[in-house]
Length: 522
Image 1 (cartoon, rainbow, N blue to C red):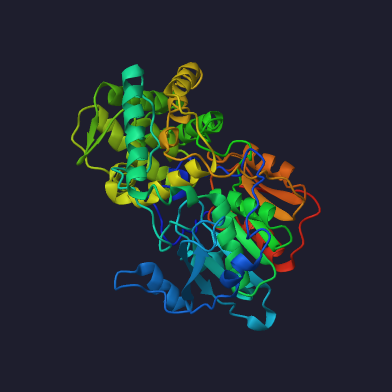
Image 2: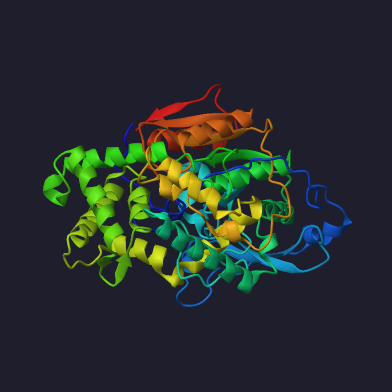
């Protein structure tokens, strides 16, 4: 069933959500190796007792006249608070930090089901305002939950980490030759060194496992024996890690756009080439049918030729788009990232952006569309550093990356024949190659029979449908709800498919998983 109207998130981003902007660099979930380190939260003892018993003071959410999220939360009847957690769970009597959370209480307390924790993904996307949109997705069952939005450690209001980067996100193409790759090596090294200089003392504690430990302190402080959970993309991974670390403490778990547990880490873009190329071809057909509107080509072949021409022009010289210059490192990323949704509004916005890039490639003076300007600001503007910095810190703190640039160069060169546009992106070097500290723990091995509902679209080019199936195999108590024929990352509520929304809401209401793996169609 097709639902032509799209529900948008509270903080909409140009033509795609932040999770899409991270291009699965932040979207893929779960961990690759076994985790053996035991810390106090997994086995609560006297050292964490004070954290579990702390008193919570609920206040207004608004912080300043320009705080739109806080104002909206207050208007909806939500309240906000801060709780104290250990900076380092292996030394709970040492340094502490505060975690910000919001609570939108059940509107039908007489039939209250429980508490539903939320996470937008990213990693490092603020989640404080998420209860507002989630209640709208949930329909009638939304009134029966307390909805909890948590800004994870080092994100948003929870001691935000900003490395002072000259960019919002580190993902780039390696370019066409060795000189271009060497520029990327220097660029990514600089990003890592900026984080080390500003936040070297706390980087080791920016990890998914510590975020899961924070969630369990939130659970106990709220007085809940078990909590329900809804997480998108990286948020699905975070939910899976919580389930693994804290068995028996979850109720209804919805993991939307979950990724392959074997691919999470600094090189998690690898393997996304084929679904992204399929999405690119699908968009090209759509744009060809609207050649009169966008002028990109009257056939799929012609549109793809336009894309190649744009990329080639950016290789010769940076393209001028308004006040921005976009080069061979940025243009391929913009193209690959923009095809990740088949919703009409997203495709129209992306097609308008490509039209601008095409004109710039032909030497025409152009200004960006509003959507393209937002994306260029995110990719190229230092004002967005507070998004990319903590995302990198979490990924680099979770899983170690190869340190030798030659490893990346060899992979890039091997990928060029089959994937000339995407191979230099998915195999490119990243800040983790130069991260100042190795991960303090082994990654979490995801393997249990905890009940959960995994939701995925077959055309997801970020975490991929194949990745969600891998998560489903490892969570043997789970069910996989598939949206067939759709290209999109983030399905429940955000894609606008009535069938998916109804099945998720039925599970949240009853707590009963389907007998088999249900399916919906676009």
